[in-house]
Each structure stands twice: as structure tokens, then as C-alpha cells.
Length: 93
Image: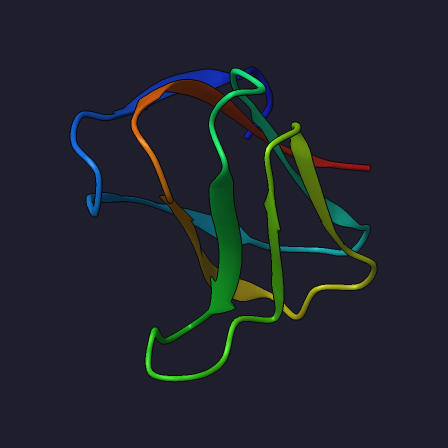
């Protein structure tokens, strides 16, 4: 967690996945910074990908997801929708 990490969706219909281990308390923030021409979808899943996401957003602007009090465990971040380079940042407060 912490600083931003660059990612890329090289072709339409591709999906980028990231995982993060969450321990302790405090909110979890997922920030997606990307070109405004790119209509993207970002979703956050807990423990398994076989369930509905715990948070998600679709927009042509930058996106911010927040889990107020996440349960400890592994979370998966999904980025999709369009092509291009983006920066995703995961932080805890």
C-alpha cells in the first residue's frame, strides 16, 4: 500500500487485477487516476471473486472507493473498461 502504481489496459475487454492484504483497523481507500476520455470501471472484492463486489464505480473521471471499516483479509481490485495507462493507489488511514 502507499504510493501509486502504474497499470495498463492494452486492449478493450481486458481486465487488470491487483490484490492487497488488509490487517488492523482504519478505512481502506482505492484511488484510480486516469485520462478523462477513458470510461472505466473499478471494483473491490473481499476474499473471493465469486461474490458481488463490496464497492464499485464506473466513470470517465478519476475514481475513489472507500471501505470505512474493512474486515481483515485479502481484497482484490479489478480495473476494466477501455484502454490506456492508469495509476492506482491503495491507502489506509
